[in-house]
Image (cartoon, rainbow, N blue to C red; front, side, top):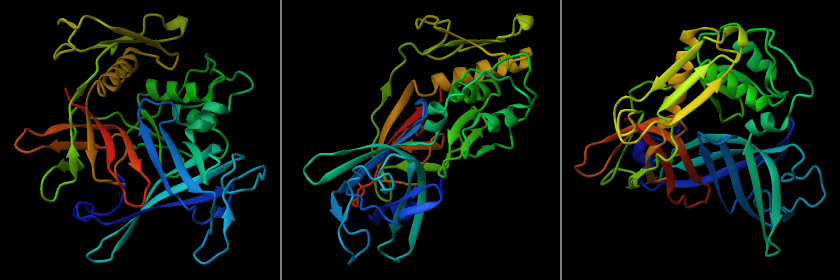
Length: 364
């Protein structure tokens, strides 16, 4: 969970506005892009996890009282909204109407992938988190591991992108008798799945390997309706179509063909012993060198697949602190609280805030 304003401020209709800054390399191109509307979204099972969409007026002064500036990039490679390596830093500024105290919460860094002029005075700009660089920057030749999981993750990350690791993750050597694919993204995800770990991106665009989530969430945020609450609605949703209840993880190394881990759900509505049936997902990697590693990978992948299957799509007052994997509880009236982790979020970037939407994958 990010730092930001306390619950009581967010529940009290604070002043809210986005702050978007444009950069190219280490040069600031615009201290504040005049955002008319927009959204930032994040989804745990999406390839680049986070995406940005903003609309800006065609003509607007970059600073109060300044001359009008043309926010359509045109053919200018140095324009603040062009797609030639420019990225946008997004923050949310919240001010308490009671105390006038101000909080600024950094949301993320997004590389611009395109823009569109609607010919009616509005420019729409699309961006993606810096995980897109791992997707786009393919290796030009085959390479084999020369170090550990952590050192290989750093080596395989695109140039200029930092990588950090949860202290709870125990590093181990990679087998040298294997080759990485030419996709940096596939390789980084293979490292994460085999560790096991969760591959994420932080608000500065750095790649983060987090430890797997615990069995039971310890909520950092309690969402409730009524007085002093920020919860607007929380309808239930359940989509289990094709979600595996068995994961088989094995080595991709023919010399270790007997190394295999199997994880399965044996209770609940997706139990292998019930009417749901058996849905098997198979996964292999040469990074798995013994049964313990294979079993840990299978269990982590099974939990990651099952978590968003039963979810609560929640509408709340905008909260810039919420991130993917945050443990939360949801309380409505006299109903028993629901517990789970944030698997997706959709944050508005309009001046009046609007509702925020999050998906909470429930514990089984």
